[in-house]
Amino acid sequence: MNGRLKAAGGAVGGGLLVAGTTSDAGKSVVTAGICRWLVRQGVRVAPFKAQNMSLNSFVTREGAEIGRAQAMQAAAARVEPTALMNPVLLKPGSDRSSQVVLLGKPVGELSARGYFGGTSQGKAQYAGRREQLLGTVTDCLQELRRTHDAVICEGAGSPAEINLRRTDIVNMGLARAARIPAVVVGDIDRGGVFASFFGTTALLSKEDQALVAGYLVNKFRGDVTLLEPGLEMLRGLTGRQTLGVLPFAHGLGIDEEDGLRVSLRGAVRESVVAPPHGADVLRVAVCAVPLMSNFTDVDALAAEPGVVVRFVDRPEELADADLVVLPGTRGTVRALAWLRERGLADAIARRAAEGRPVLGICGGFQMLGERIEDEVESKAGVVDGLGLLPVRVRFAAEKTLARPAGEALGEPVEGYEIHHGVAEVSGGDEEFLDGCRAGSVWGTHWHGSLESDGFRRAFLRRVAADAGRAFVPAPDTRFGVLREEQLDRLGDLIEEHADTGALLRLIEEGVPEGLPFVPPGAP
Image (cartoon, rainbow, N blue to C red):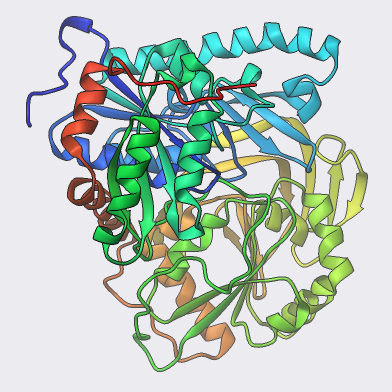
């Protein structure tokens, strides 16, 4: 397969859109898997998502903010993530408004009505904005296709959201503009996958349907031969093949996009439970604050043998925790009020008074301080913090986007910063990643620091000592290696269970001719 898909002499490389019947159908995972499979064949591949709505974001080396899922897909493709891979990022600040990040930089806050258009005037305003945004995203895609052999594009939600089709720049609107074929992913574990495939296709216009080249079944459990009659009937109804049946596999989720709502199942990932290296386990409770962002920070803790990570939302759930984490949030003042309303603020204060460990990251760090002055995010003015760290925070209009590196607890550490709050540290027992420690309370603006293996082990040793636990970090846990193994497993899924020949033909040759129309089509 080596040597195929080579874009010679500046020619435009191949492209493919991975759409889905629903949100969370598996588009991100399939996109990452295709990227890893292709790069293992010697293909220069890049991921792309025109418009992403997510509170989990990442900072590229050039200081641009993109969706964290695209950063992980770039890792799957073994390329450096750039703003080109996610030109439009929407970061929800409430159920009705989002910060708009364009080419890695925030450009304003808009309501859903303001972004998509809700009145005749709004429609007219959006028509111009859609053309501008569509031009931006297609330019980014074109540049990626010029510099790579293939670009695997991820859609958003469903391509059959008929109320949003006229404003679409990420699903069939993108496919039409770039003339790339689409495959539709369906989650069979939810049930109704045949109806979802058929209904998705039948709700598209004739022009959009002409680009839908096939389907991928995701999360299948059982004997695939029992599914085959249905797949044949689906082909008869739609004229389109199913290009693979991917089996259900535990622990294959990459960094999630949806930060508005997180399941409080008590676990960060479905992963193999390893026994503790020492005599005790270490229990970590993550407060599931409103608009929680970059909760992927605790993934590295969950990867440690003997560390049990849970999301919690009640004060009694902190009682047996050895470490409480206040994560990032897009609504620091709102999250602070939520902590107080639920009694979590008092429980955290009692922990600190007893010398039991607390860690605040980004928005969590800000909440642990003495005072917050916010005329930017919540516009609430001056608000008292929890008073557990000697820190005062002032929200600035300009967002800090950085990739800091340094040393803490005697170990090298790297991270990334995404925040409007500017912290003034006036004391504490020691500096800590540009933040500070006071007693058993730690705070920093750095996301991702716990992915630095030596630093994570040193921090957990301090936590275990303060908590009185005979917990010993495993000496050989390498988070980066675990991530690579996970991405390889995604590549294996595609290689072993998808029709890779058909996928290659779509990427290389484009939209097949003669795909039939499935009535009734778009309203």
